[in-house]
Length: 231
Image 1 (spheres, rainbow, N blue to C red):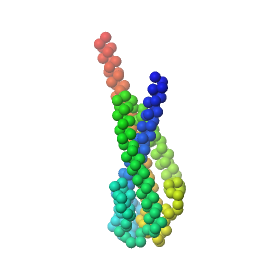
Image 2 (spheres, rainbow, N blue to C red):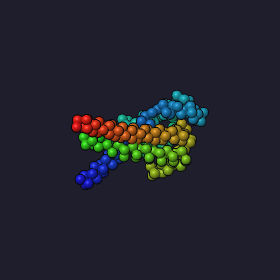
Image 3 (cartoon, one colour):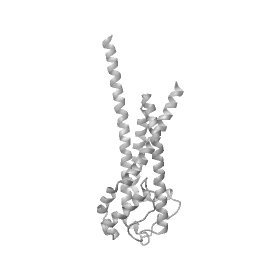
Image 4 (cartoon, rainbow, N blue to C red):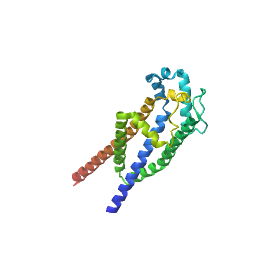
């Protein structure tokens, strides 16, 4: 019996990990696809004045970059404006797309695993995986959010040093004009949105756990009262 308990605990921890990876991957793609976030930053960060590009030209070039990185895109990166990137910048964007493709694979793999796991534990009337998922998706984003608030530039630099094995991400202001419309603050806003979405998923899982637990206790209490009244 004890062995079975630990077996189920382990499986629920694995399901929590699968859900966490799915939430992170999905949040990354939702943020990537959220073009209005960038459109808002065009005004907030004064990108028109800082870059020297017209607003519609900025949007067109940004849209080309995002469409290139979306899951269903398999074409080459071509900007509407000329001389937007050097050869090394092009290689960097290809590496960035590889990272997004990895998130896509993770999300696709996690979907059937999560569905199977949820169905299994639903049939067993077990729900601790919701609490484990909630804890994971609340604690980790909180830590990351704290680091972003303390020193975004250092977090941004560390991410690039870990994710890439070259310095192609260090764009040249004159040769890689695309960097003029991609300020660091915008990426910080993207990171905040990802953290917020993951945090929201964690909150929902935690709420569902305590809601179902309360519902279960009420049903048990009602059953006990009915038995006592029957006696």
